Length: 179
Image (cartoon, rainbow, N blue to C red; front, top):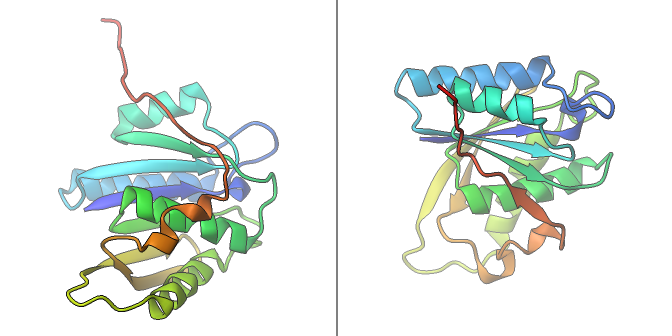
């Protein structure tokens, strides 16, 4: 099982990226699943503000396999975040997605919006004979869980165009520990 942990801009405080309580809880839960053998890979995606180098290294040492950064508006709306997450779903193909949000409840419906948007897009796509689907579980910490069906292969119209032309940055996850 592949787990993607999403750190939304609301999960950070001020200009300095911080791992708030919900972000830490999301990562802790993902690491527990990996240590128990139920997950093979954990990817942490920071949206809006990149993790500091210290935070990134700490996560890698704890057992996170990779970290990614997605640029977006400083205060994106729920719909913009849902669109960002759809692109991440198509790129990373997670089986379980943890969404950590800030403590202010502004994005408390992000998981619900994402589930509804995925279901709507699936219902509007042309059915293809023999099309295969997979299940994605979306868990928004403090708000609930949704299970949705997504196509194994994105349609041509979904060909990651929902990134809206923004730049995506990946980090080199190699770690050299002097020793």
